[in-house]
Figure 1 (cartoon, rainbow, N blue to C red):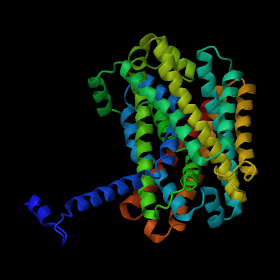
Figure 2 (cartoon, rainbow, N blue to C red; figure 1 turned 90 degrees about the vertical axis):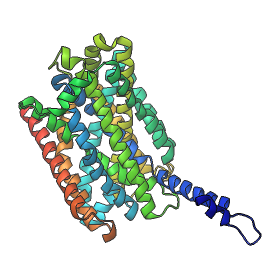
Figure 3 (cartoon, rainbow, N blue to C red; figure 1 turned 180 degrees about the vertical axis):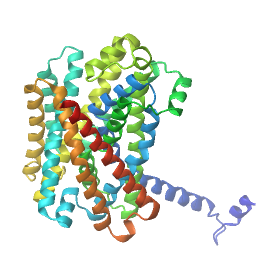
Figure 4 (spheres, one colour; figure 1 turned 30 degrees about the vertical axis):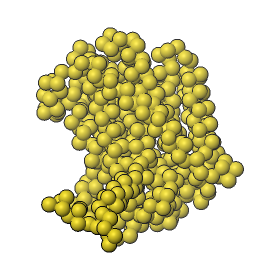
Length: 440
């Protein structure tokens, strides 16, 4: 019957229009598919940065101490991560303003300066964590700390000063993709599927150590700088004539894709350490890149441990350093009303680029002059946890007050997002409390 209909679809001259109709349908579908890909990038990049050096070490500790028990929590965190970051997408695309600028417009300059100023300090601290990760990888192959961190800093400064958002995004995602090397590391660890399923089905351990690591995993799933970065990045990327609703759909796909990828990377790290250290040396302490690589060497071999965990850590640390640098500089520049697009030259946006370069240099100097990087990293985690309630509080409030009614959350989704934000805040503060009590 279908072919009969096509045969009867003719013009007055007797020429069938069926091929033209089919071609038009295919073209329309192709355009719709292309539209979905326009905003791909900011979400993937910020999520790759979320799996930073500190997160990798936390995942490795989780696997080494509790085998595969933390696989399920990481998977559960996928929708939580998406719900929070998706708000930044709607705010950025609908208002055309970054997070700092929106806070200034809605709540005033004082709150905006407090939020962005504290964020910038936290970003410099986060850069210390990332450069410490790079230094740890360099030490594995005999490169001095000053050489590895200086090279990373020089590369970041050059990339930022060259400008153009799309160039920065493409390079950032390419480097961040090195994190995917954690996946073959998990495969070569030869995990037992039956044991994984057992631990996933019995994830709860009634111990203080488990509760501490759970708080660290949940509390670190949203970093304050992620909110500032993605909201400004969707603006800087430019939707290239795409309508608002179509751009939001594309950006949501971008955010969902990134959320899945970053949590699967965390799962891979947990499986790699759980299948090796979690079985043979359960409870071993892993607080640095060198400790992880050394502990895994007997199981994976020296070359695989260096390649998979070394390069994976470089990807995690460098993409996070890039995102953190831009988030801090964007935040301050937005609040002060400075030009702050990566598509502007350094001459046109001198303040923004000065902040970015200054943050990178400050991070490198701290890594080189502070002897105990472990304690410094811990202090950064505490600062992030303390800043998180402020950032998420503003994010939820802006979603309600700055967006048009048709773009605001409603019903179950609204309350689910509020609940997720509250849980993340509680676990973040709990992590800070545990760390502070441990340091006391």
